[in-house]
Length: 410
Image 1 (cartoon, rainbow, N blue to C red):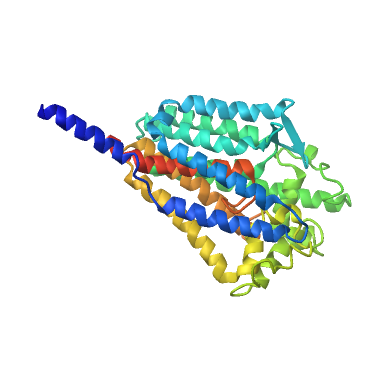
Image 2 (image 1 turned 135 degrees about the horizontal axis):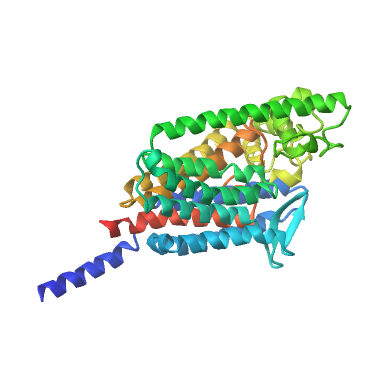
Protein backbone atom coordinates (compact mmCIF):
# COMPACT_ATOMS: atom_id res chain seq x y z
CA UNK A 1 0.00 0.00 0.00
CA UNK A 2 2.76 2.41 1.00
CA UNK A 3 4.73 1.49 -2.14
CA UNK A 4 1.70 2.17 -4.33
CA UNK A 5 1.17 5.52 -2.61
CA UNK A 6 4.82 6.48 -3.18
CA UNK A 7 4.52 5.63 -6.87
CA UNK A 8 1.39 7.77 -7.17
CA UNK A 9 3.07 10.71 -5.41
CA UNK A 10 6.07 10.32 -7.71
CA UNK A 11 3.83 10.32 -10.76
CA UNK A 12 2.09 13.53 -9.66
CA UNK A 13 5.39 15.24 -8.85
CA UNK A 14 6.84 14.24 -12.22
CA UNK A 15 3.76 15.65 -13.95
CA UNK A 16 4.16 18.88 -12.00
CA UNK A 17 7.80 19.15 -13.07
CA UNK A 18 6.69 19.27 -16.71
CA UNK A 19 5.01 22.63 -16.11
CA UNK A 20 8.19 24.15 -14.68
CA UNK A 21 9.81 26.65 -17.01
CA UNK A 22 12.64 29.14 -17.03
CA UNK A 23 11.20 32.69 -17.32
CA UNK A 24 14.36 34.43 -18.54
CA UNK A 25 14.41 33.04 -22.08
CA UNK A 26 10.76 33.80 -23.01
CA UNK A 27 11.06 37.25 -21.41
CA UNK A 28 14.08 38.11 -23.58
CA UNK A 29 12.40 36.66 -26.68
CA UNK A 30 9.22 38.67 -26.05
CA UNK A 31 11.01 41.99 -25.55
CA UNK A 32 13.29 41.47 -28.56
CA UNK A 33 10.35 40.42 -30.72
CA UNK A 34 8.35 43.53 -29.81
CA UNK A 35 11.37 45.75 -30.48
CA UNK A 36 11.85 44.03 -33.84
CA UNK A 37 8.26 44.71 -34.94
CA UNK A 38 8.48 48.42 -34.01
CA UNK A 39 11.74 48.96 -35.84
CA UNK A 40 10.86 46.92 -38.92
CA UNK A 41 7.86 49.26 -39.13
CA UNK A 42 10.17 52.26 -38.69
CA UNK A 43 12.59 51.03 -41.37
CA UNK A 44 9.76 50.79 -43.91
CA UNK A 45 7.32 53.50 -42.78
CA UNK A 46 8.21 55.91 -45.60
CA UNK A 47 7.93 53.24 -48.30
CA UNK A 48 4.65 51.83 -47.00
CA UNK A 49 6.13 48.37 -46.41
CA UNK A 50 4.06 45.85 -44.46
CA UNK A 51 6.76 43.45 -43.36
CA UNK A 52 6.08 44.40 -39.73
CA UNK A 53 2.63 42.82 -40.03
CA UNK A 54 4.12 39.63 -41.41
CA UNK A 55 6.67 39.66 -38.61
CA UNK A 56 3.87 39.64 -36.03
CA UNK A 57 2.41 36.55 -37.69
CA UNK A 58 5.79 34.82 -37.73
CA UNK A 59 6.41 35.68 -34.08
CA UNK A 60 3.02 34.31 -33.04
CA UNK A 61 3.65 31.12 -35.01
CA UNK A 62 7.13 30.97 -33.49
CA UNK A 63 5.68 31.32 -29.99
CA UNK A 64 3.47 28.31 -30.67
CA UNK A 65 6.43 26.28 -31.93
CA UNK A 66 8.50 27.39 -28.94
CA UNK A 67 5.85 26.15 -26.50
CA UNK A 68 5.35 22.89 -28.40
CA UNK A 69 9.10 22.18 -28.60
CA UNK A 70 9.66 22.99 -24.93
CA UNK A 71 6.80 20.71 -23.80
CA UNK A 72 8.35 17.68 -25.53
CA UNK A 73 10.90 15.81 -23.44
CA UNK A 74 14.26 16.40 -25.12
CA UNK A 75 15.08 12.68 -24.80
CA UNK A 76 12.67 12.24 -27.72
CA UNK A 77 14.95 14.39 -29.87
CA UNK A 78 17.87 12.23 -28.78
CA UNK A 79 16.10 9.03 -29.89
CA UNK A 80 15.09 10.53 -33.24
CA UNK A 81 18.20 12.62 -33.97
CA UNK A 82 19.06 10.80 -37.21
CA UNK A 83 15.55 11.22 -38.60
CA UNK A 84 15.47 14.94 -37.77
CA UNK A 85 18.89 15.43 -39.38
CA UNK A 86 17.82 13.44 -42.45
CA UNK A 87 14.75 15.62 -43.00
CA UNK A 88 16.91 18.76 -42.74
CA UNK A 89 19.36 17.40 -45.34
CA UNK A 90 16.48 16.52 -47.67
CA UNK A 91 15.22 20.10 -47.39
CA UNK A 92 18.66 21.36 -48.42
CA UNK A 93 18.78 18.96 -51.37
CA UNK A 94 15.27 20.07 -52.41
CA UNK A 95 16.79 23.42 -53.41
CA UNK A 96 18.03 21.71 -56.59
CA UNK A 97 14.51 20.63 -57.50
CA UNK A 98 11.68 22.71 -59.04
CA UNK A 99 10.85 23.85 -55.49
CA UNK A 100 14.12 25.82 -55.30
CA UNK A 101 13.87 29.55 -55.84
CA UNK A 102 16.84 31.56 -57.07
CA UNK A 103 17.21 35.21 -56.09
CA UNK A 104 20.17 37.60 -56.41
CA UNK A 105 22.30 34.83 -57.88
CA UNK A 106 21.80 32.43 -54.96
CA UNK A 107 19.64 29.34 -54.52
CA UNK A 108 18.58 29.61 -50.87
CA UNK A 109 14.80 29.36 -50.70
CA UNK A 110 12.14 26.69 -51.11
CA UNK A 111 8.95 28.00 -52.67
CA UNK A 112 6.08 26.17 -50.96
CA UNK A 113 3.52 28.50 -52.61
CA UNK A 114 1.95 29.48 -49.27
CA UNK A 115 5.30 30.67 -47.90
CA UNK A 116 9.04 30.36 -48.48
CA UNK A 117 11.50 28.63 -46.16
CA UNK A 118 15.28 28.79 -46.00
CA UNK A 119 16.60 25.23 -45.41
CA UNK A 120 19.87 26.52 -43.95
CA UNK A 121 17.84 27.61 -40.89
CA UNK A 122 16.41 24.14 -40.32
CA UNK A 123 19.83 22.59 -41.00
CA UNK A 124 21.20 24.31 -37.87
CA UNK A 125 18.52 22.59 -35.78
CA UNK A 126 19.07 19.11 -37.20
CA UNK A 127 22.87 19.36 -37.09
CA UNK A 128 22.92 20.60 -33.48
CA UNK A 129 20.66 17.73 -32.36
CA UNK A 130 22.58 15.00 -34.19
CA UNK A 131 26.05 16.16 -33.12
CA UNK A 132 24.88 16.45 -29.51
CA UNK A 133 23.49 12.92 -29.88
CA UNK A 134 26.74 11.53 -31.34
CA UNK A 135 28.85 13.06 -28.59
CA UNK A 136 26.43 12.04 -25.83
CA UNK A 137 26.47 8.41 -26.96
CA UNK A 138 30.28 8.29 -27.17
CA UNK A 139 33.12 8.43 -24.70
CA UNK A 140 35.40 11.37 -25.51
CA UNK A 141 38.97 10.80 -24.36
CA UNK A 142 42.22 11.76 -26.07
CA UNK A 143 42.27 12.79 -29.73
CA UNK A 144 43.82 9.45 -30.77
CA UNK A 145 41.23 7.45 -28.86
CA UNK A 146 38.42 9.58 -30.30
CA UNK A 147 39.31 9.47 -34.02
CA UNK A 148 36.14 7.55 -34.94
CA UNK A 149 33.91 9.98 -33.03
CA UNK A 150 35.65 13.02 -34.52
CA UNK A 151 35.34 11.57 -38.01
CA UNK A 152 31.62 10.95 -37.49
CA UNK A 153 31.17 14.47 -36.10
CA UNK A 154 33.05 15.97 -39.03
CA UNK A 155 30.87 14.04 -41.50
CA UNK A 156 27.68 15.22 -39.78
CA UNK A 157 28.46 18.94 -39.97
CA UNK A 158 30.45 18.92 -43.23
CA UNK A 159 27.48 17.79 -45.34
CA UNK A 160 25.16 20.74 -44.51
CA UNK A 161 28.09 23.17 -44.74
CA UNK A 162 28.89 21.89 -48.24
CA UNK A 163 25.26 22.09 -49.39
CA UNK A 164 24.87 25.60 -47.94
CA UNK A 165 28.17 26.76 -49.43
CA UNK A 166 27.05 25.55 -52.87
CA UNK A 167 23.92 27.77 -52.79
CA UNK A 168 26.11 29.89 -52.22
CA UNK A 169 25.59 31.18 -48.67
CA UNK A 170 28.94 31.78 -46.99
CA UNK A 171 27.40 33.53 -43.97
CA UNK A 172 25.15 30.65 -42.88
CA UNK A 173 27.91 28.09 -43.39
CA UNK A 174 30.13 30.01 -40.95
CA UNK A 175 27.68 29.34 -38.09
CA UNK A 176 28.38 25.60 -37.98
CA UNK A 177 32.10 25.43 -36.96
CA UNK A 178 31.70 27.50 -33.74
CA UNK A 179 28.64 25.43 -32.81
CA UNK A 180 30.55 22.15 -33.22
CA UNK A 181 33.72 23.35 -31.53
CA UNK A 182 31.78 24.64 -28.53
CA UNK A 183 30.26 21.16 -28.09
CA UNK A 184 33.66 19.51 -28.47
CA UNK A 185 35.17 21.94 -25.97
CA UNK A 186 32.73 21.03 -23.19
CA UNK A 187 33.26 17.34 -23.99
CA UNK A 188 36.76 17.70 -22.45
CA UNK A 189 38.54 16.77 -25.66
CA UNK A 190 42.33 17.16 -25.56
CA UNK A 191 43.61 20.72 -25.97
CA UNK A 192 45.95 19.53 -28.74
CA UNK A 193 42.89 19.11 -30.97
CA UNK A 194 41.93 22.77 -30.62
CA UNK A 195 45.52 23.98 -31.00
CA UNK A 196 45.86 21.98 -34.23
CA UNK A 197 42.63 23.26 -35.70
CA UNK A 198 43.39 26.83 -34.66
CA UNK A 199 46.64 26.53 -36.62
CA UNK A 200 44.67 25.17 -39.61
CA UNK A 201 42.25 28.09 -39.25
CA UNK A 202 45.13 30.59 -39.37
CA UNK A 203 46.49 28.88 -42.48
CA UNK A 204 43.02 29.11 -44.04
CA UNK A 205 42.84 32.83 -43.26
CA UNK A 206 46.28 33.31 -44.84
CA UNK A 207 45.19 31.43 -47.98
CA UNK A 208 42.05 33.56 -48.30
CA UNK A 209 44.14 36.69 -47.72
CA UNK A 210 46.51 35.75 -50.54
CA UNK A 211 43.55 34.97 -52.78
CA UNK A 212 41.99 38.38 -52.07
CA UNK A 213 45.32 40.06 -52.80
CA UNK A 214 45.53 38.20 -56.11
CA UNK A 215 41.96 39.19 -56.92
CA UNK A 216 42.65 42.88 -56.33
CA UNK A 217 45.84 42.68 -58.42
CA UNK A 218 43.95 40.88 -61.21
CA UNK A 219 41.32 43.64 -61.35
CA UNK A 220 43.92 46.40 -61.57
CA UNK A 221 46.09 44.69 -64.19
CA UNK A 222 43.10 44.01 -66.45
CA UNK A 223 41.30 47.28 -65.73
CA UNK A 224 38.17 45.43 -64.56
CA UNK A 225 35.34 46.57 -62.33
CA UNK A 226 34.57 44.48 -59.19
CA UNK A 227 30.85 44.98 -59.85
CA UNK A 228 30.54 44.93 -63.63
CA UNK A 229 33.00 42.07 -64.15
CA UNK A 230 31.98 39.74 -61.32
CA UNK A 231 32.98 36.15 -62.08
CA UNK A 232 36.02 37.05 -64.16
CA UNK A 233 38.50 35.95 -61.47
CA UNK A 234 36.72 32.79 -60.32
CA UNK A 235 38.17 30.60 -63.10
CA UNK A 236 41.69 31.84 -62.26
CA UNK A 237 41.56 30.83 -58.59
CA UNK A 238 41.37 27.42 -56.91
CA UNK A 239 39.90 28.95 -53.73
CA UNK A 240 36.12 28.20 -53.82
CA UNK A 241 34.91 31.77 -53.35
CA UNK A 242 32.58 33.78 -55.54
CA UNK A 243 33.75 37.22 -56.64
CA UNK A 244 30.90 38.92 -54.76
CA UNK A 245 32.19 37.22 -51.60
CA UNK A 246 35.68 38.53 -52.33
CA UNK A 247 34.16 41.98 -52.79
CA UNK A 248 32.54 41.80 -49.36
CA UNK A 249 35.82 40.85 -47.73
CA UNK A 250 37.65 43.65 -49.55
CA UNK A 251 34.99 46.19 -48.61
CA UNK A 252 35.68 45.29 -44.98
CA UNK A 253 39.47 44.91 -45.07
CA UNK A 254 40.35 47.65 -47.57
CA UNK A 255 37.32 49.78 -48.54
CA UNK A 256 39.56 52.60 -49.73
CA UNK A 257 41.10 50.22 -52.30
CA UNK A 258 38.01 48.50 -53.67
CA UNK A 259 35.64 51.46 -53.35
CA UNK A 260 37.54 54.72 -52.64
CA UNK A 261 34.46 56.94 -53.20
CA UNK A 262 32.19 54.82 -51.03
CA UNK A 263 29.44 54.60 -53.62
CA UNK A 264 29.83 50.96 -54.66
CA UNK A 265 30.55 47.79 -52.71
CA UNK A 266 31.10 49.51 -49.36
CA UNK A 267 27.96 51.68 -49.62
CA UNK A 268 25.86 49.67 -47.16
CA UNK A 269 28.65 49.54 -44.60
CA UNK A 270 29.36 53.26 -44.80
CA UNK A 271 25.68 54.15 -44.51
CA UNK A 272 25.34 51.78 -41.57
CA UNK A 273 28.25 53.46 -39.79
CA UNK A 274 26.67 56.86 -40.41
CA UNK A 275 23.35 55.55 -39.13
CA UNK A 276 24.80 54.09 -35.92
CA UNK A 277 27.06 57.09 -35.30
CA UNK A 278 24.34 59.70 -35.85
CA UNK A 279 22.23 58.12 -33.10
CA UNK A 280 24.50 59.61 -30.46
CA UNK A 281 23.80 58.80 -26.83
CA UNK A 282 20.00 58.57 -26.75
CA UNK A 283 19.06 58.49 -30.46
CA UNK A 284 16.80 60.59 -32.66
CA UNK A 285 13.57 59.00 -31.44
CA UNK A 286 11.36 56.26 -32.79
CA UNK A 287 10.48 56.59 -36.48
CA UNK A 288 12.80 59.60 -36.83
CA UNK A 289 15.81 57.94 -38.44
CA UNK A 290 16.94 59.43 -41.74
CA UNK A 291 19.37 56.94 -43.31
CA UNK A 292 16.73 54.29 -44.07
CA UNK A 293 13.87 56.70 -44.72
CA UNK A 294 15.85 58.73 -47.24
CA UNK A 295 17.05 55.56 -48.94
CA UNK A 296 20.73 55.84 -48.04
CA UNK A 297 20.45 52.58 -46.14
CA UNK A 298 18.57 50.51 -48.75
CA UNK A 299 15.08 49.33 -47.87
CA UNK A 300 16.04 45.83 -49.03
CA UNK A 301 18.46 45.43 -46.08
CA UNK A 302 17.28 47.97 -43.49
CA UNK A 303 14.59 45.67 -42.06
CA UNK A 304 16.71 42.53 -41.90
CA UNK A 305 20.52 42.49 -42.05
CA UNK A 306 20.87 46.11 -40.89
CA UNK A 307 17.96 46.39 -38.45
CA UNK A 308 20.44 47.16 -35.65
CA UNK A 309 21.60 50.23 -37.59
CA UNK A 310 18.02 51.56 -37.68
CA UNK A 311 17.59 50.81 -33.98
CA UNK A 312 20.89 52.47 -33.00
CA UNK A 313 20.07 55.60 -34.98
CA UNK A 314 16.70 55.99 -33.26
CA UNK A 315 17.63 54.80 -29.75
CA UNK A 316 21.30 55.67 -29.63
CA UNK A 317 24.14 54.18 -27.64
CA UNK A 318 21.97 53.49 -24.59
CA UNK A 319 19.37 51.67 -26.67
CA UNK A 320 22.08 49.63 -28.36
CA UNK A 321 23.50 48.63 -24.99
CA UNK A 322 20.03 47.58 -23.85
CA UNK A 323 19.57 45.25 -26.83
CA UNK A 324 23.08 43.84 -26.47
CA UNK A 325 22.32 43.29 -22.78
CA UNK A 326 19.18 41.33 -23.66
CA UNK A 327 21.13 39.17 -26.09
CA UNK A 328 23.87 38.61 -23.53
CA UNK A 329 21.26 37.54 -20.99
CA UNK A 330 19.69 35.17 -23.54
CA UNK A 331 23.02 33.49 -24.41
CA UNK A 332 24.32 33.35 -20.84
CA UNK A 333 21.03 31.88 -19.68
CA UNK A 334 21.39 29.14 -22.29
CA UNK A 335 24.86 28.37 -20.93
CA UNK A 336 23.45 28.39 -17.38
CA UNK A 337 20.80 25.84 -18.38
CA UNK A 338 23.55 23.73 -19.99
CA UNK A 339 25.28 23.68 -16.62
CA UNK A 340 22.05 22.54 -14.94
CA UNK A 341 21.58 19.62 -17.36
CA UNK A 342 21.82 16.18 -15.75
CA UNK A 343 23.00 14.43 -18.90
CA UNK A 344 25.54 15.02 -21.63
CA UNK A 345 23.00 15.34 -24.43
CA UNK A 346 21.25 18.23 -22.68
CA UNK A 347 24.61 19.85 -21.95
CA UNK A 348 25.87 19.63 -25.53
CA UNK A 349 22.56 20.69 -27.04
CA UNK A 350 22.20 23.82 -24.88
CA UNK A 351 25.84 24.81 -25.44
CA UNK A 352 25.63 24.29 -29.22
CA UNK A 353 22.44 26.33 -29.54
CA UNK A 354 23.89 29.12 -27.40
CA UNK A 355 26.90 29.18 -29.74
CA UNK A 356 24.59 29.52 -32.77
CA UNK A 357 22.94 32.58 -31.25
CA UNK A 358 26.27 34.05 -30.15
CA UNK A 359 27.64 33.83 -33.71
CA UNK A 360 24.52 35.43 -35.22
CA UNK A 361 24.54 38.27 -32.68
CA UNK A 362 28.27 38.97 -32.82
CA UNK A 363 28.56 38.81 -36.61
CA UNK A 364 25.40 40.83 -37.33
CA UNK A 365 26.07 43.66 -34.87
CA UNK A 366 29.77 43.52 -35.74
CA UNK A 367 29.10 44.02 -39.46
CA UNK A 368 26.85 47.04 -38.82
CA UNK A 369 29.66 48.81 -36.95
CA UNK A 370 32.53 47.69 -39.19
CA UNK A 371 34.01 45.00 -36.95
CA UNK A 372 33.02 42.11 -39.24
CA UNK A 373 32.61 41.63 -42.99
CA UNK A 374 29.05 41.82 -44.33
CA UNK A 375 27.85 38.23 -44.49
CA UNK A 376 24.06 38.48 -44.48
CA UNK A 377 23.52 36.81 -41.09
CA UNK A 378 20.28 38.18 -39.56
CA UNK A 379 19.78 39.26 -35.95
CA UNK A 380 17.64 36.86 -33.89
CA UNK A 381 14.08 38.10 -33.20
CA UNK A 382 14.83 41.62 -34.52
CA UNK A 383 15.52 40.98 -38.20
CA UNK A 384 12.60 40.36 -40.52
CA UNK A 385 12.33 36.78 -41.70
CA UNK A 386 9.88 33.92 -41.52
CA UNK A 387 11.85 30.68 -41.38
CA UNK A 388 14.63 32.37 -39.41
CA UNK A 389 12.21 33.54 -36.71
CA UNK A 390 10.64 30.07 -36.52
CA UNK A 391 14.03 28.35 -36.30
CA UNK A 392 15.16 30.69 -33.51
CA UNK A 393 11.99 29.91 -31.55
CA UNK A 394 12.47 26.16 -32.02
CA UNK A 395 16.11 26.36 -30.91
CA UNK A 396 15.21 28.26 -27.76
CA UNK A 397 12.36 25.78 -27.20
CA UNK A 398 14.96 23.00 -27.16
CA UNK A 399 16.89 24.81 -24.43
CA UNK A 400 13.68 25.27 -22.45
CA UNK A 401 13.02 21.53 -22.82
CA UNK A 402 16.45 20.79 -21.34
CA UNK A 403 15.58 23.00 -18.37
CA UNK A 404 12.09 21.56 -17.93
CA UNK A 405 12.94 17.86 -18.14
CA UNK A 406 16.48 17.83 -16.72
CA UNK A 407 15.39 16.29 -13.38
CA UNK A 408 14.14 13.20 -15.16
CA UNK A 409 17.78 12.07 -15.10
CA UNK A 410 18.25 12.62 -11.37
